[in-house]
Length: 190
Image (cartoon, rainbow, N blue to C red; front, side):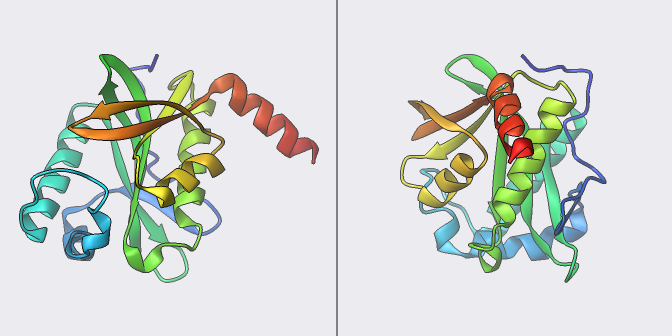
């Protein structure tokens, strides 16, 4: 599956509009805006605490992932404005007792519907396959989250199965390395 000795972080990577870097504690107030918006959690069943506590738990989880080489979200910085637009990264997850490498993404609502999530997710996909991190990548998406589903589809993924993850009914979207190669071959020929 995945290669534990390699880094899953896209530190210093970039796309035409986005810089990737590690999350910093100084990003907290900007990221707090994500947790203040009720739209960001409406698709996920969990015990909701205050926005501040949710944000603190988010950061604690990301720093734990960094320390234990379990992947983690990267801060996405808009090259034009220098603002934090959200997070995207490669995350080691256990789904149905299988260890998988997930492409996860969350954007501050101000930056929704601008193509940033797709741009970042594609970069994560290409980085994972080009660096031999896994032969298969997934995205775990709530059944009701149509925005995230569109990003997964644009990332070349297909719905693999429906399952339960952390008490939520979810779609598992997947792309295999062979599908990625075929997709790149078609894209490069056109």
